[in-house]
Each structure stands twice: as C-alpha cells, then as structure tokens.
Image 1 (cartoon, rainbow, N blue to C red):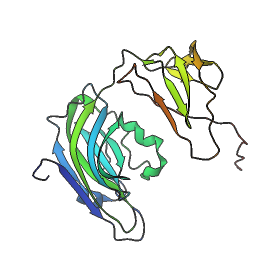
Image 2 (spheres, helix red, strand yellow):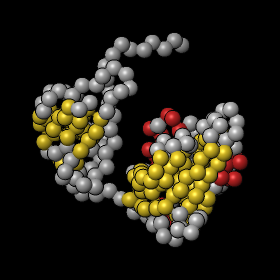
Image 3 (cartoon, one colour):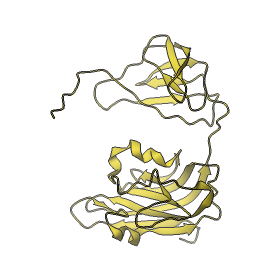
Length: 249
C-alpha cells in the first residue's frame, strides 16, 4: 500500500511462456498477493464490485478475491473471484456485476482449478480480500495500482424499459418493459418475445427500427442501452445461423 492508500500489485515473468498463478496449480502466486480486511466491504446485499485500477497494458490478469468465513487458501473454497484483464494504460473504473462473469471469457486461461464459483460463499460473512496477478504473458512485467473498491447492487424494481439493441451501428428499439430476471429473445421483424426465469413465454413486445445483422467473423459490436433504467444490469448473447460443424466421434 502506498502513501495514498492505494494497493500496488506487481510481478515479473522472465520465462518464454505465459505463467498462470493459481491456488491448485502454482503456489508461487501467493508471492504476488496483496491482502486486506473487509471491515468496510459489506457484500451482504451486493454481488457486484467496482474497481478503480491503473493499468500498464501488460496483458496480465488482475484477480480480486473476496474471502468468507471458512475460506481455504489452497482450494479457494468459500471465496469469490473478480477478474480484470490489464489491457489498458491509465486509470479506469471497471464494474463487474458478479463473479460468474469470468466464466464467459475463455481468455482468462485459469481453468477449473482457478475459479471459486459455486462454492456456497456466504456474502454476509466476508472477512477479507486479496489482489494478485493470476496470469502473466511471456517475458512481461506488470505493475498495477488499485485505488478504489466499491460494492455494487442493481435496481431490480424497474426492469429494462424501452431498450435499444444496437448491432454494428444499426439500432432496433423495443417498446415496453422486460422485468428483472426475465429473458428477451429477438430474431428480427417487429416482435420480440419475453420469457420468465424458467423460460416460460410471457408476452410479445413491439420492435421498431432497421434490421440488425451480424457479420461473419468476430468483428461484431453489440450494445444494449436505455435512458429509463439507469441501474439495471443485463447479460447478452448473439446466436447466428450457419453451416453446422461436424465433430467426429
């Protein structure tokens, strides 16, 4: 911790390959860990965190781990991990809605021995936290500063109201409200379908605007915006049709 109260985490990888620091895979990751107590981090009603981080574009992965009662430092049991790829230079505030976000990214490189998802963490008994660099690219050094940690909670009472779905610069506008913990499916045309948490159909919503289309390859940009739901969190997925892949047995 420096004189401003910020936490500094650094590591050097002098090898010719990417190094993964994990509880089960490489105990040396503890050499790059910075810990603290959670007296001011109340997670009892929160699942998200906002981390203010100064990065060096090293390509490392910064891991923020919250620790609950009964935590096992070797297996990660009763802890939760939030991961920030250090692919930027300067200071940013990164908002992560929950620890399961890391499962949607294949580039983290940690595998099953890394993640602490699904370990029945008791968010009412968070006793501490730690930061460490979980992945270091070959021949790289990294120095990362964390100057702010804030617990986050979404507003579940409003839902997503009059959402705009923008894909590759074209926007489709959904008229109406998608309630909390519900799904919206839009496959083109002037209607979208709303389903409840168990995928039971509930209703149609009217959609206006131009046709939105995905392009071949990975160069698709997609966003969901609304001016009427300032603190509603969403998870999105794009599915496309194409030639099926044949996987030999």
